[in-house]
Image 1 (cartoon, rainbow, N blue to C red):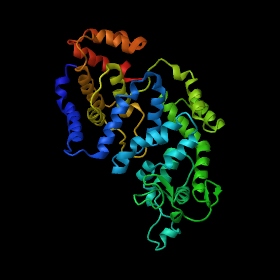
Image 2 (image 1 turned 30 degrees about the vertical axis):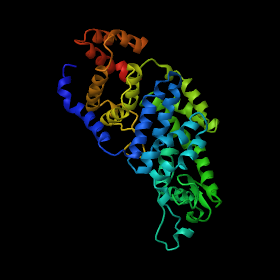
Image 3 (image 1 turned 45 degrees about the vertical axis):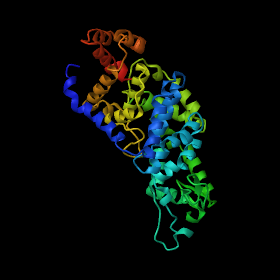
Length: 397
């Protein structure tokens, strides 16, 4: 901590990120919505202990089915609605229902450009100057269901893209439906039966895509892919193969009943191993900081801090979302930035709070003698809090 004054450049990154959020003199509606969403999340739901596991699951699935506010104004506005409408209602339900809700949500359709995809032989492509956009189809197979090693081919990508042509968002004029909602544009849909992964789907309009998604949700590769990601997120960076197989088998046996899948995960010995194996991501670290300290920063400060730590809120670099392993979040640069964030929160703690009592109450049985001694020997009270926030027990879960 003695090197902290030398970290002013790193601390400045937080200030710059916050200033960037505050810069517009006239409120920018998409950003105002994002600030309200961040305030509701970090100064609201994460402070309710009884819904902790559900919140963790919502964060997991929102990252699995990632969209980015940087894509467009529409995505900027819709990211929060996407999580509430497509993710949260299905967190404890069936994966197939969540998958259909995700792939038909305006946020995902806009993020992966499916409204630009036109069947090559559709009525809407009479002049033959337009064609398929394969973004949504590719990510549905590669990221959302089967996984990169799931056994699909480029032909399958093209076929799925044809199957979901016509899946779009009603525009302002309302010709196809209520503006801003999912609609099926039959005129843009590629006509004819389609064969995907060896199964043939009859040309029955929007039903063709729905049936294809239901089968993708039931595919053995999807069970393996989802099980691997869940075990990696909750258990260890290198998922234990036996546990992955147990969770995958439960996924298949229950037809994607996610509640049953979670029970299989939590019923394992590995889930209750006291070793703190996972490094908290910046978003998890921020949630832990705010829950432990009781601080309620302004949402622009929260967003700026997350950006400075490398995990801007709802803004991954690509549709694969943010990484979930220590090699990304435990780099020297990342840890240096966390030191600045820890100091910022430590400086706001009320003077009557003792850091030794705080670290004991916050970490409970996880508290090691080494961490307690380091906090007790701190030169200043604020330094004691910063050490507590930067301890292995606080950085890991």
